[in-house]
Amino acid sequence: MNEMMQHSIFFGGVLSLLTYGMGMAFRKRWKFALFNPLLISIVACILFLIAFEIDYETYYEGAKYLSYLLTPATVCLAIPLYEQLTVLGRNWKAILGGILSGVLTSFGSIFILASLFHLDHSAYVTLLPKSITTAIGMGVAEELGGYVTICVAIIILTGIWGNILAGILCRILRITHPIAKGVAIGSSSHAIGTVKAMEMGIVEGAMSSLSIVISGILTVIGAPIFAQFL
Image (cartoon, rainbow, N blue to C red; front, side):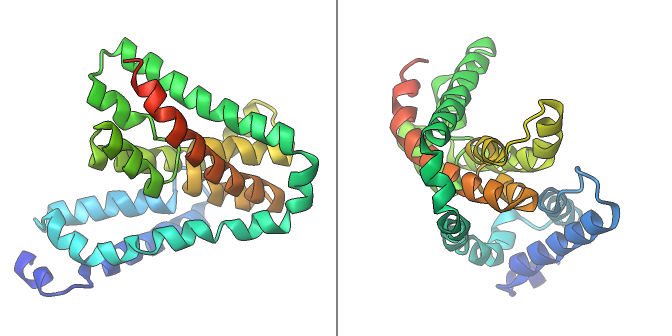
């Protein structure tokens, strides 16, 4: 099986799309929060590779072409923001304050947890960019001397859990304002969480898209500063 897959440059991409489609079908059929399509796709791909003893390099030869779509997909999130410029203009102070609070909370929680669990410097800086989009987070982790591959995994998991828990936490904490929802989701769980924000509403999606950009910029600026704390 491994040798056969090595001759197909589309194997990784096809497997990823099929498992994601399966996740979408599960989510549509049962509408359960844990049936996140991306989470199901990741677990299914891992199980498939283990079952047929296919190494990651073979899988990635085809899957890497999907990665090329990450940046343009993120840029497209600017469209709903453009459509809500009036809302942004009226509430820009609260929005920027909320995003800054989200970034500082992320940094602070990572510092506290890293101190409690006695993580070394490399592991600590690997976690610092956990709440920003993968394209930016990889560069931040590499620049600070972190583990890039682990950083990517942490960023994806952060987004998945943000997508799963966003609606539940908003109900528990009684967060009802669409701007507050969007800023909270975008500044904590980047593009994957923004998908959930867009499901909630147009304003939520637009504010979440804005939060991705500003959170990324603030993290690039703030991560080197917080990296010196441990």
